[in-house]
Length: 326
Image (cartoon, rainbow, N blue to C red; front, top):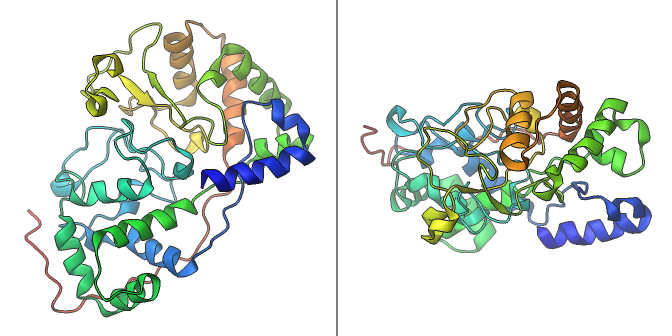
């Protein structure tokens, strides 16, 4: 995915050399190379039978009609358990340096396996999830077509889900069209907001195609961020105290849709989020009109949302094992 984006960007910079000097680059449409795998991954993404209760799917917490998240401070998982951290958007997640706030998954495939076996998310196990799929003839046939094998294994399940998630990019945002030379694609206040965004120092972390997602930074660099959320951040992965409270910088693509904000989901408006980040990360107090400018710019980062028919999930057979959901 990164290679695809780099090649596409090289071609664009030849046509629009001004973009080479900008810290933010346009998101480009994704070209599907394996339609059968993507279709299988889409079915699995929406299938709640990968959860112990039979009610929770990937789309439950990363809803594609809600900016790829669930608009809750923290998600509700198995047995109505509240999760420990805000669900990041799945849109443009293939552009991230790693997955999850703490970066514990190196790529989308590794990420896709986590929630299935997490006792407070989907509450299942990889073995039981595969056993469920193995009883459904249509899934057996699809896996045979895509992977040329009669045996379904969890690596195939996560590979197919990741293939679908790679397609969930959001190109053609007004700001992208502006970068490509369509001067009237965004308003004057949004143009001022972009200049303010750069001048304030926001692009030190929020840059590239995803306008973030490519580094880990401490939350509360200048002033501490006060929260009751127990998440340790990157230190939970590295074991290094210096990494405590470092989180993957979130993408700002479609950010007007992905409230509430921050890893604890504590902030509900873009205005408040912008002011807090300026103060805590950059040591700057924005005037109301400056905040309004930046927010106007951020709203131009909403691109084309994924558009496809919802999959018709293969029907279960009477042999499908279903453990007690409790």
